[in-house]
Amino acid sequence: MRTRNGGYLGMFVRENPPGTLVIERVHPGSGAEAAGLKAGDVVEAVNGIELDHGDELIRRMWTPRAFTLNIRRGEETLEIKTSSKKLDAYSMVGAQAPRFAL
Image (cartoon, rainbow, N blue to C red; front, side, top):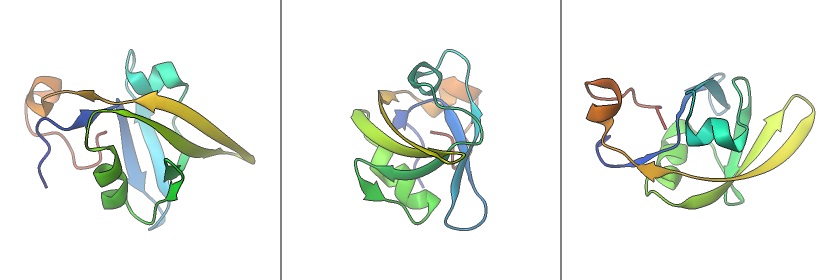
């Protein structure tokens, strides 16, 4: 999968168990942090479209733009508006970014 020049929000997501997309880490100073996303949040939908796997999350957030995330935090469901920005993954980590770095 291409990782260069896609949308960057500033979070790492893992799929555990399969089909459940959990934010593992939020980068300090990133758009994800500014939006209030936290490690442990579960991403359920992007722009109201439910997600079944990580590839679908990447595809929906690939283009730098504004969007709404439906997040489950414990028993609470949140609707968080945020946006990704264009960032060359090589400038972010010095090498190809991990697959679920968004």
